[in-house]
Image (cartoon, rainbow, N blue to C red; front, side, top):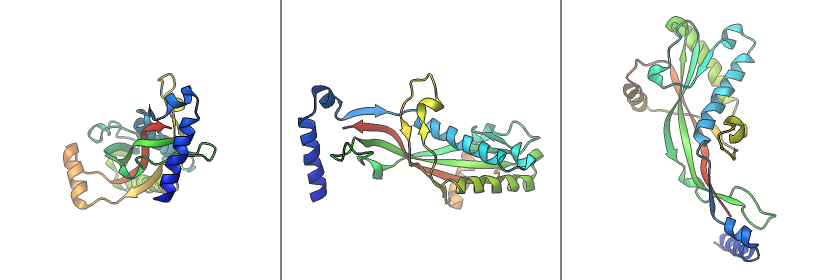
Length: 212
């Protein structure tokens, strides 16, 4: 492909004229191992803020958790939304995709490893009231649908004093369509009775980048 060849030639020239320190940095792998956990925290924070902003005292009191499904329901007198990470799948389409530009000469980094995360969002009403659970689910769906792309996530701010660094940007948030068989399989695996739930996918979470 002419464009790709041209870009590769440009990058080689940039590497050839770089200082020794810059050349040592080429192809350096940068790990963002805290990225998955940071996305979970971001979803939880997003829902907490959205429920409090409704102005409805019943919704403002909803408990937002990120527990395993079989241990999520420990408080029965409150409405609750639980966000559980269900699957992690590699996003092969993003491999080696550029992340930015170096003065127009070429990408400053490429994606070395990215994943897509699928979350199970479950709603509970006080004392297992299904109508209350449905109301809570509606509010959660509205909040998530309103956020097609997650706000930028600074790993150092999410996990201070942990050594985590890097920024996650452009993460797409979409509702996942699950077949009946998948729903049944998940709840059987959790060894707990089915509760009102839906699935959401966060696409393109970068676990590792390669600096050019």
